[in-house]
Image 1: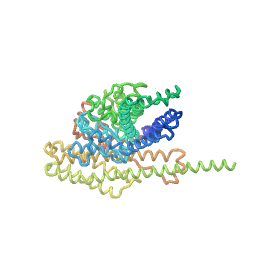
Image 2: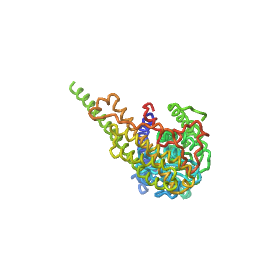
Image 3: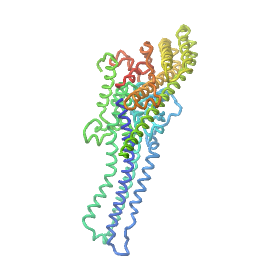
Length: 341
Length: 226
């Protein structure tokens, strides 16, 4: 089946991209660190003998270690911290019929998709949305807002859960959770750094006797270096959005394959789109894990190169249209009369 | 010359091993998918006595319907005791289970006529459990059919077909709909949130696709073009 070929390709791509993301992240910080070391070395090389000579690359080693710790944290604690940040509570025993139905629906989708049942979480939020997080099918979690449970019927809820199981099965959750963890950590770090730098700039008096020997190249590199510090969080954000748009189409297709009912997901997406309540609980960091953009950004409604870089989800209208086309195809194959959609 | 021959031989040997392993893996996936169905079928068999006892008191005039369910359930239990994914057992299980599904569908339709019964918490919960079980059976069947189709296709494709004999690969039997009555879906709306729109209001979506119960939704995976 066409979706199966895409599934294997996507799984491989996700594994590869996760590896490269980790490697790239550590290398980027190593570059920042060792670059600073080299600049300091150049700056202090010609200093008089009793001044400080920068020889051992402490800065590079420190930043590389920090990057490795951040990567470890994003991997080990990422899923839990995302769930905690949204205030999700786990369903261990269903408290009411709605939760029981949710548990049953997730069970059914677990059977249809052939992967173990993920942990189920509920978020108290009127904005209808859902997301999945985790590393691989055996350790993943799915969270659903109470808003979604309220507006969707059983079939539509099943379509949404099928979409999330699709993300779990093709390992999107691994890449996206890692990305969310790294983006969050980088944002924290850059905030801390900005505060430190502004605080220190006032103390920078005239220590510059030793720097008179430096050429213009040094300052160019210093400028580039400072620029990369400023750009790091922005680049990480763009990376985060750049990878996630098209995979939503694949997850939609996988949902259609699991449920054999693409119209249900199309209706669910329509309802979610109309609800248009900005989420008070799901913040930007977890946006690309959700089924619909929780912040309702206008870039999500557009197509094109820039929108691909800035938006977290594809245009909802296109997703709905594709799903309805699948339903139409299925009806044609089944030979039943097709009425107006 | 000898080296080139050795390389060619090694490549062929590696391919044979890979093809053999992939067939074995698929064979086990098919068996696993069948076990999944088995688990869900047993669950349904176990839930039914509970349902019968709960509704028996209030539905005294529907004895025939209740009796049909009990008989179908006992027959299905008997078949599943000697069942397995090879040969005609799939067809026998399919036949017995589809009869049970039909009987349960008629029971659900009849329960609609007793609004007091339906509003009792117990019955609503049981109905949700049974619907969920029906859906699980349907999805397990779907997964089984998908896996079996992949297995059947792979063992017939060239050049894997050359290795199929080594594995002892036999085409797995697909679970097909045998009872025409099963395709007539009985629409019981169990939505907790928004109610499902009445079928008349959405003519573009025929019942067999709108409600993925234990019905015709599984004809799709049998077609290899999907």
